[in-house]
Structures are given as C-alpha cells and as structure tokens.
Amino acid sequence: MSEETKRPLKRSLPLPPPDKGAHPNGHRHGEAFMLMIYRSEDGRDVETIWNSRDGVCPFMVGARAAEPGKVGSLMQHVHWGADCYAPYHVPNVGDRIFIDLTLEIAKPMVEQQIDLWWDDADNPMHETFETKDEAHDALIAECMKDGAPATVLVTHELQMMFYNRIAAHERKLMERARGERYPKGPRG
Image 1 (cartoon, rainbow, N blue to C red):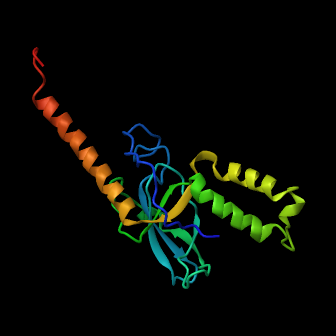
Image 2 (cartoon, rainbow, N blue to C red; image 1 turned 120 degrees about the vertical axis):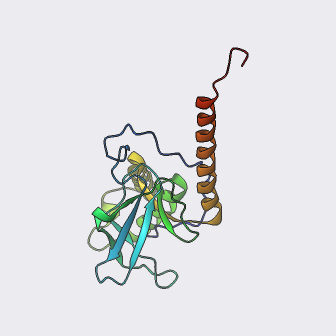
Image 3 (cartoon, rainbow, N blue to C red; image 1 turned 30 degrees about the horizontal axis):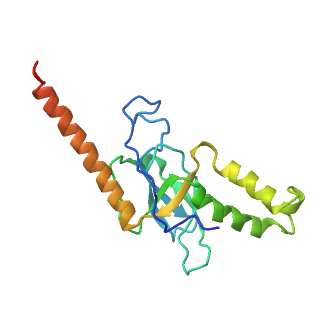
C-alpha cells in the first residue's frame, strides 16, 4: 500500500492558528508543523518529514521504495526531542510531507488493501464483510475519521502553495503594522 501520491492538492493550506492551543507551540497537537526524523530499524533509511498541519502523525511510515513498485522498509519516528517546530517551512520539491487524508488519496489505498486482504490465508477480509463494496465503505469511513494523515510528495505546484501562504501571511502582518502606526482618522 503506497502512502504517496503525485497528484496536486486542490485545497488551500491553512495558516497555523494563533497561540490558543494546549501545547507549547499553541496548537491542538504537539506534532503540529514539526519537522520529524524517521529511521528504519537497520538505520539505512533516514528521512525528515514535515507535518504541514495541526494534526497527528503516524509513528511508522514506509520508507521510499528502492525500486518502482516495491515496498520499502518501515521507518519509525525517532529523536522526538529533536523535532523542530517550523510553521512556515517550505519543503523542497521531492520531499515528503504529512497532509490531511483526502478521499482522493484514501480510495486507491483502500482498494489496494481490500485486494490484498480479501482472501488472505490468516485473516481473510471476506469473513468480516459480505461484499467488497461493504468493506470499501467501512474502510473509507474509518480512514476519514479525525483528520487522518497522508504522506505525499511535494510537487512544484504544492511548493508554490506554501510560498503563497507565507506571502499572504506577510501581507496581513504588514497591513496590521501599518494600521497600528497610522490609524484611520475621522475621514477614513
């Protein structure tokens, strides 16, 4: 089951909310907007993955496959104390990041999971669900709960969305700063 997609995202990326959350960085989740290190057990695969949102992240991710179509080893989130808060990070093209799982990403993952497990020798999915459609609907509903994460490759288009998000935020800060220095008079 692949965690990656090269399709561009079709939604705008939110700015981090103001400091009102339960964590020191002001967000609902401690791993919000963090750069996190993932490493395989043998240490051969190491990758820094950015969480581009205020959402949870998996403890394990698949390593990038060595060959197209092959599944890489699993990597675990390590060195938690070294996670770096980077709400305005702009990832490089080709980096992997965490985003909120979308239906567009979930559907092929679920279909692949059903194909893999439907007639599995040890835990056949057909014993739990009467039809593949029933399994599909149940797994999609489960996947889409509570802002589940997905891992995607950063494309040029996605990278530009992050640059534009920062530029929009800077414009708002400049407008706010100008407004505080030069409040509008009675004539506007």
